Length: 116
Image (cartoon, rainbow, N blue to C red; front, side, top):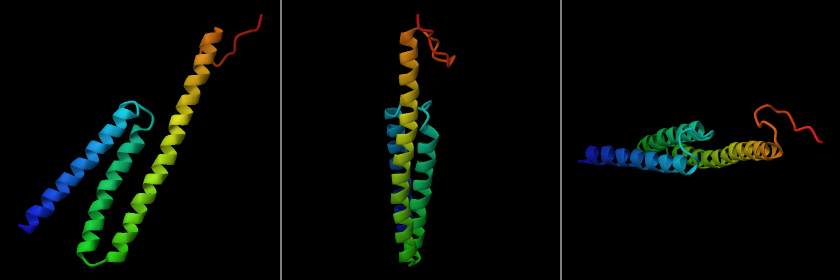
């Protein structure tokens, strides 16, 4: 029975992480957005790290389990900063492209319109 509980809790935990990652990807612009690979890699790291915490805790290595947990929480902060950077860069490109298009230049050419 203990084995069944561990297996089902692990599967449910992976499903929850997958659902949260999917929701964040969809909310962040879909699977074609710039930050999507970063989010998928982070979700995979969170899943593996969570399992490592469980194994370390079961073997009585409480300090290692706590350190892994702290590392996972800090990784979330790194993701937030990196995602903010990706979003800011994409927003700046869109903003610059929009202002050039309004001015009559091709936004992909990098050329500025010639003033009359």
